[in-house]
Image 1: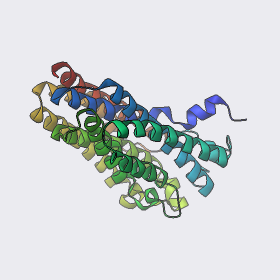
Image 2: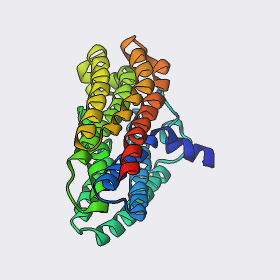
Image 3: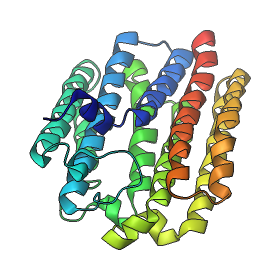
Image 4: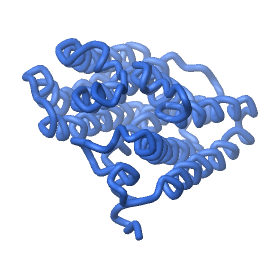
Length: 291
């Protein structure tokens, strides 16, 4: 039987900061331009966390049944390791999507019903990252989708459900969060270039090659720094405190640019996730305080 510890590992808890960060940033913007609606912020957090866990289980299932997880360097996968059946992992993925959908329906009912369509697109994008006959994650489009859904949509959406208005600072914050969420995936795919190449998984890292992928990671960190400045210009200069995220982002950047490979890139994923969370906290706190 699959243990609780196995299911927790399969949910990949180290990726969860990438789900918390956009909600923090979006709520900070909402508080500054209008006011934070905390119960909506909590529901947005449920949606974000459930989608993150759902996509993790969905990737585990889809990669596992394709056999692309048979020889992994990274965290344990449930299907690939044989710790859980494909059917059980698939059910866990859809249960997570169901939780996200339920919370999203409440937000749509109390904000705008067109948000149901946005939520549906998010779930479809989460499944087809590695699911279906032609998963877009195998075509080098994973980073684009992460930037859009775990950056722009998540941050702007969190702000919108609380203010019901379009706010430029939310877009800028979405760019910063999206860039760092992308950087996590870039580091993950950089680590997996050897095994992905053998299995025919044509990620962006495989297409670009290791050296250009390393440069892309550093570029995304710079984009995140520039986004802090953009948020500060649009709101308050106190938001520049967000630049302190670089203290957490620079060590993994040095590791990536220094040629780290294989297991040496695993700490980079956790450090990048921590940098993303720190970005959101340091930007959101001044906005919440002055809102």
